[in-house]
Every structure is written in structure tokens, then in C-alpha cells.
Image (tube, rainbow, N blue to C red; front, side):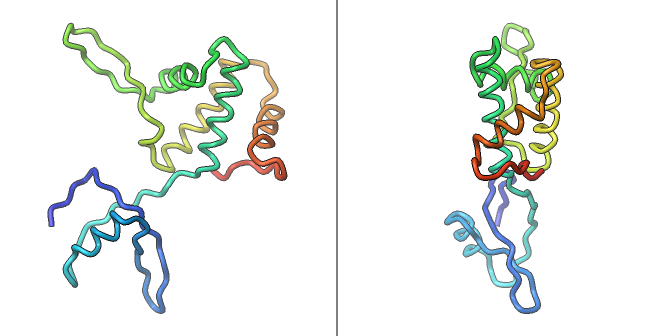
Length: 155
């Protein structure tokens, strides 16, 4: 079976009696596992899913800050955050000019997004909202996402 390194399949870990197994979660993952021959060995790369709560919080924070500042749109602020934090690729155009292309947050794994998230929040309060009390704004964003609780998203 030829392995395509860019194909990803959602699985979950399960404990069965005295062994641990991976169980397919998606139809694609189930199909790939069904193609394996009994006793066939395969390489598996583990990549943990990002925290949906943390992603929702990031987008809510960026939207709130963008609307309250000269950025005006989430997209503009997200691009600026990525450029300032170095989350971009340099692309050479046919005319020889070098262009910065922001990386997609969707391509980040859990660990990379967690680092990006922490750096982005620090940059927002240092550069976009200098002197602003961050705990009050962060609590306000948490409250908007989940009115009953004021817990921070897990990192």
C-alpha cells in the first residue's frame, strides 16, 4: 500500500481488554483501515486535534479587537498577527518580487496552534492594545463564549 503523507484520517484511541487500538472515526479512515491486510504493518504519525474551544476563543478575541481598533476586520488583524509572529511563507513572484503569504491556522496542529495562540494574545496586548488591562477583556470574551462559566480555555 503506498502511503500519501498528506492524507489524514481521524481516529480515536480505545482500550480493549489488554491492548490499545485505534478506531476509525471518519468514513475515509474506516476505508483505509479496511484496505489493510491482516498483520500488515504501517507507519502512523500522531497529530492531536486542536482544541475547538481555544480556536473559538481566538476568533472571538480577534473579532472583538479588530472591531474596536483601526483594523476593523478580523481578516486584516489575523494577517497582521501572522506577519508579526512570523507565520508566513515567502513566495517569489514571476517578476522577482518577494511576497509574504500568511499561513493558515487550519494547517496548525494542537501544539503549534497553542504556541501561536499564546504569542498572538501577548502581541495583541503589547502592540494593538498597549496598556489595556487584558484580564478584563479576556474574561469578557470567555463570558461571550460560555455565559455560565468563566474558565479559561484549556491550553
